[in-house]
Amino acid sequence: MDKILKVNDLSVSFDTYGGEVKAVRGVTFELKEKETLAIVGESGSGKSVTAQSLMRLVPMPPGKFTGGSIEFNGENIVEKSEKQMESIRGKDISMIFQDPMTSLNPTMTVGKQIAEGLIKHQNMSKKEAYHRGVELLKLVGIPNPEARIKQYPHQFSGGMRQRAMIAIALACNPKVLIADEPTTALDVTIQAQILDLMRELQDKTGTAIILITHDLGVVANAAHRVAVMYGGKIVETGTVDEIFYNPKHPYTWGLLGSMPKLDGGSEELQAIPGSPPDLADPPKGCPFATRCPYAMKVCEDHMPQYTEVSASQKNACWLLDQRAPKVDIPDTAIVGGTKVHG
Ligand code: SF4
Image (tube, rainbow, N blue to C red; front, side):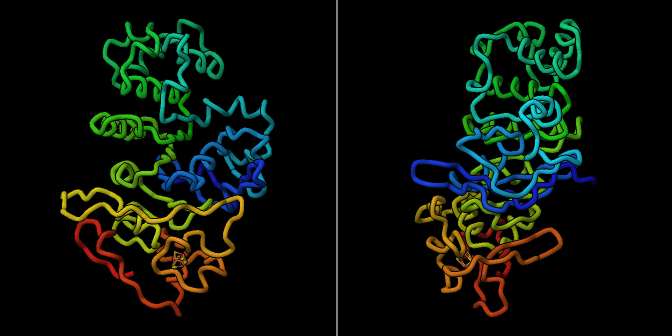
């Protein structure tokens, strides 16, 4: 599969009264056609800023790019003007958000909101855009789309609003869809339906998806690959199977330990004690060192480099250094009962 997006050593900061907050610190990843990459991490890990940067939605100032590039269609998004971005947003790269009410316009019918992009980017007439809108609402599973297209967002349920937002985001057949916590505000049943819908639509349209979430549980059936972010950095990346069945980073172990077990096992959920680092004054060593039960002296002083665990799995942790003590994956992080040695 071809790579359609290549993020290379991207850094994004914010100027604040408390100093420069380095929200994203040298993030590198690729996205291939038709794949879903999940970017997972706690709040403040830099995952949403990374996602917003891809569409240049980070307000600048106070935000600023401090290094790296975002290659899309052979061009660097970081260097685009605001005007150039207008023709990319919604057409080539689209985004759906956690709360459709904040991104849908309450004063416009859903139909008008779908038609806007089609008229602007696809040169459709109003009539053509209306017909395409009905098709799109049908595609995302909204019953009676001919009537629904004339309604306002407040006349839709939460799940239907999210479906309508997906219809708007997919209207122009974008190459990349960024979904920022798309199911967090929904109840569990609707969550599963929306994730199923995204997968179905990906099969039909081939759109590549970046799924931003704090919840590893959401990732299991929804993504092909996972990038785990912490303290503005990607600390581990791999296929879904590698991250769930052979995780190597203590932070990933912590995230897995804080997931409800599928077998309903009796083990209690393990929240990761402590709080994320202050990115106005980031640590010079591993960002997880203050919370990591396995931290060594070297972790505090030196940033771990990436080690290739396999062709698809990479990890930034000193435990993978040959001189480090051997540490087993804790029982709380074991998914499916198979213990793989760390
Ligand atoms: Fe823990 Fe050290 Fe690995 Fe960081 S580098 S996760 S502190 S063992």
